[in-house]
Image (cartoon, rainbow, N blue to C red):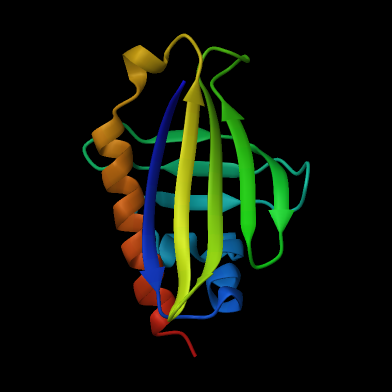
Length: 142
C-alpha cells in the first residue's frame, strides 16, 4: 500500500468548500486534476471521473462513493478492472481551522500494479494543483 496526502488552508466556510466539491458538473470550469466528474455524491453511488495528472497519463474510472459526511468528508473507492490489481481509496476532508478550513486530499493505493503504475510525484502535483484551484474558487465565491 502507498498513501499520498496533500493539504491546504482555505479562507472560506466548510459549507462553501463543500458546495464546490459536490458540484461535479462544474469541475471542468476550475479543476485541473479532476477534469470531469459525473454522478451524485451519495453513499453507494457510482461516479464517472476523469483525472489528468500533470505529466501523467489521463485516466477515466468509475469509483463508488463510500462515505458522505455533510461539510466534512467524501470517500470513494475506484479500481482498475478487478479488485487488488490497482485500487484507490480517495478522501476529501474539510476540517475547521483558525481562518476557514483545512482541506486535505488523501489517496491510498493498493494492489499488485501499484509499484509499476503509481507516479507519486505526479499525483502530488495534481493534488496541489487541485487544492490551489479549490482555494482560489472558494475564497472568491460569493
